[in-house]
Amino acid sequence: MHLGLRYPDVTLLLVIVVACAIPTRSFASGLVLKPSAVWFDSTDVGQTKTVAVKLSNTGSSTVYLTKTAVSGAQFRTSSLIAPFYLAAGRSKAFTVTFHPGSRGSFDGSVFLWRKGTTVPLVLALHGKGVTGSLVASPQSQNFGTVALGSRKTLQEVLSNRSSAAITITKLSVSGGGFSFGGLTVPKTLAVGQSYTFSISFTPKIKGSQAGSLLVSSNPTNSSLKIGLAGSGGSSTRLSLGTSSLNFGTVPVGSSKSLSGVLAASGGSVRISSATSTSTEFTLRGISFPLTVASGQRVPFMVQFTPKLGGAASGRVSFSSNAQNSPVVQNLAGIGGASGQHRVVLRWKASTSRVSGYHVYRSTSSGGPYSKINASLTPSTNFTDDTVQSGKTYFYVIRAANSKGALSRYSNQVKAVVP
Image 1 (cartoon, rainbow, N blue to C red):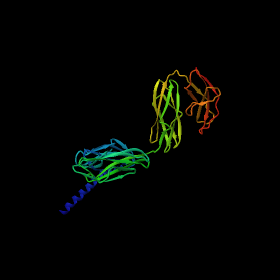
Image 2: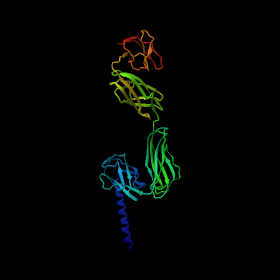
Image 3: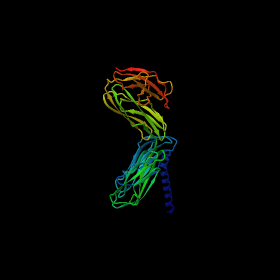
Image 4: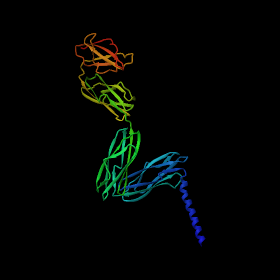
């Protein structure tokens, strides 16, 4: 009788081993889940916690996933919609969230079915819903892109939702560039009380950075974790010689140009484009894309051509990879009466390498001449709209190089104003 009892035990054990081996063979294709199981921290009832999961195909052939499913009303997945193919050596990331509706421990699973098998790959899920705890709002902080060496500060709120006082005993921050302030421990919060403090991000290196703030206290969730994320960005800046250009009164149908300057600091700046909000203001003398070296100053011109009488305004926005992009040049002018006289000058470009031209005028042939353009004119034309009726004027041009050296006067031209 004793031997008769032993043999059935041995036979049953062999059957169990074989049965357990079947699921393993069904996913011999190399599908791997990391983590292999998800354990959520204690989560306040009504709050949500999320964990990232990666499904990898470590096999040598493409796998076709036909169906997925989730068990447990407190658990959800995102970015996991079947059917889909997963090539050899590739991975697919998705997230699992836990949202307890009541107190207690909860279990669930994520099921993934592969074509050709009825046995799914299973990701076990475990979570615990708690009440009467310390709650953080928001549950995570994202600082976005912050210039290297600069600081960005966000507000964080801790609230006591328990039925007893809670004492915050310790705060521990991890991740480069993250810090906190405005909260000295130990700190006791009465029932229903909240406390606001600050979390700062001061990146020292470029690129994405992640960290966390661990708040230790005496409630159920004695280790409350606040996720932190940010990115160290460029410290370069693009600046203008002046933030606004005022063209004064310009006759309708005529044009007037003023010069501006773009300058880079903290590193090279690549300007990708520039846009004007008004067709009456046109950017001249510069093209994009354009790289401005640190310390370099690049001139440009804005031309105002009023189409209607009265005040006009606009903006030219320069988009770049600088930290303070876009940089905006404000513009203003007045469209005047179109019957006003003006003298339009045009000349041939200098055969030497020059930065621009100065325009001179006199009421006597041969001079003396007075310079009438406020700044160097980079183009080979100029409109003098300050002439008076019945007067005769004489004009000459001088070219200037980058060091400010001037050429001789050009030939003189005469203009008789009716």
